[in-house]
Length: 340
Ligand code: GDP
Image 1 (spheres, protein in one colour):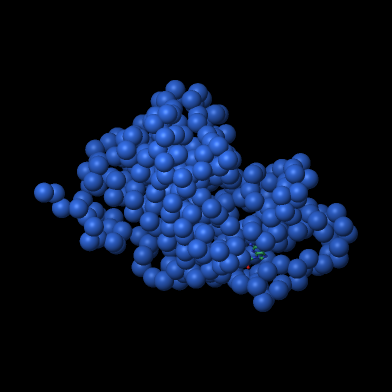
Image 2: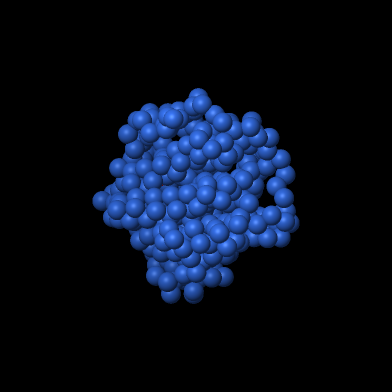
């Protein structure tokens, strides 16, 4: 009887590997499922794959396919037989949403990813890329955060439930590699922004929240804007089109058990982000900081040297990325504000 790796819970980068695979160009005509293709990361992935000439992309909205419905997910895989999968579907949100709804962030994300990864395993999907988040790393990880700092310390409490779900996903990818020898990989993006982001005032991350808030202040002629926290935390921001480019690059050039950080390698304070957004939207008033709202982790900057070694580097400047995102937001403002 073969022994199952049930007693190991630590993510071990030197774990016994059963994978013999040389990455190379993906088949442009193979069925390619993008889970979460309407979301921020998934929609960027879809655009990138279209641009790269993929002819057989598969996507389902959450109304068409509820990824927490295990039977429906298995039936979908049986019907569509994807050869490649990018798992970009997740329940995501900013600091307040994560702090308020830890049950949903843990449970829904575990269900989605376990269903998709289990179905992908049953159908022996050749290549899977699981997308995580930089919040998987310890709150006080040494900066910039290296991949091997995973599980070396306590998580940031405002998003620990979400982080644990994502860590479970990395483990599942590694477990499939060890037990079944499939060349699946994981990528951990830093804070993302761009088209199709969630711009809702309470649920969103900082960058879309501030774009909406400063833009509204310009519309209404408000003299003052109030942001959350102290403005001193440092964050790294990556345009989502760059994430998608890096993901395709990884699928064609990387194979290994260790999750790969995806970021720019540069961080800014929340205050600097607020100033840049204010400038881009043309806000001339003043900014106040509401320190009764949480700051979250003091700094989140990824070490992207592994990704650079593999051969990918970010090229979009933050101000340019913000400018194009503001343009997108203004073009879609009405439909977005209707959603709340
Ligand atoms: P985090 O990176 O997981 O902490 O998530 P966020 O993107 O939600 O928050 C980043 C930082 O921006 C935190 O220090 C927040 O306090 C700060 N922040 C300032 N104003 C806002 C806002 O309106 N919305 C959000 N989500 N964060 C804000």
